[in-house]
Length: 424
Ligand code: FRU
Image (cartoon, rainbow, N blue to C red; front, side):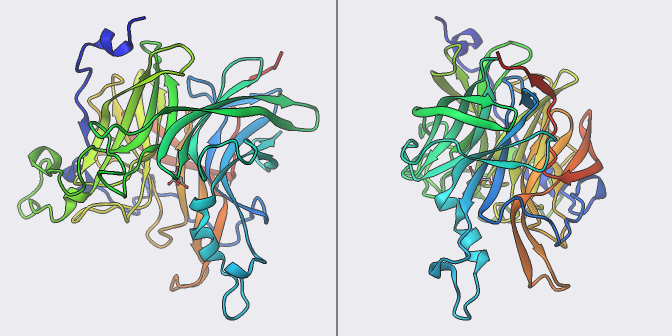
């Protein structure tokens, strides 16, 4: 069978650039692109576990899907250790901040279910201990494949290395709840190649993760987005005229921004099942702008491709900055060119008074944006904080042409289905 890249020709596309000039347009606290303040008295989903990245069950076209009336989400999850001596400080208090900050090293994939699209009930771990080949089970995407309930979970197997993998199982429902069965054989798909996507050998701070497979609404082929960094030894990247963009006098100095090399990667499936993938050049690069464009995902609307990705203040390059939150870009065709939404790329950022209140935003095709609570200040100075590890209030957003607008706020962790599949 002819590969899709052969159909496209040798060089399918040029990467679009998020430039320093674009990023200079970022305005924190613009109410149309700022998440409403999260109150410090938020409820937590569970006292046993922290959750962060939330991955709603969806179909290959991006629609959030319930099964037999049950909504299902997957979350990165880690045990809380309120009684573990390791996390008790010299005053005998639980150091929840340290426990929370350590969570990435023990992240596991869990699932939750609900009849109402909120008030989630814990289902449990998706894979039994020992099934996943690495220590960390990092973010990805659960895809409902059919009305038999088959689910392909794409995720990132991390430490050692970082490999995009998938595991197939099945969702089973009863009157009382949902269970996940199978998920026993993890199939490695691909790793960074060092030619288009940076490897660990090139940079120990490299990122290669967060698969998001989808069917292109226009050509019908199967693709996958993922987070990467542009290939090359750390420090070797050039921040030239193209990466700088059209800046005012006095803004030409790029400082040490060559160390920030994020990109949104794309791969195309060579088969109908998504077992055999070929990496293509990045869709979007942020060299000289930012080092992380995490959890990239699409909303397909009005015949356009809305590309969203999450990023942090601390990963911005010298001379540019912006809030933690979700950024976006739009194009008329899959391979671009992409232009930043709202001029700058900023779509929904944290307010500067609560810079870490939420993260890992996921924009759904119905305009709802889910995220998790990281930490919220509990005093005026911001020195006292309350750790979240739970679902944030969902935000409603309108996407219009090249602009986005915050228009609503909903309950904590509100992720309603866009369609329901009755299992056979
Ligand atoms: C985003 C993220 C993902 C990664 C996971 C690790 O919050 O950094 O990119 O898969 O969290 O915990």
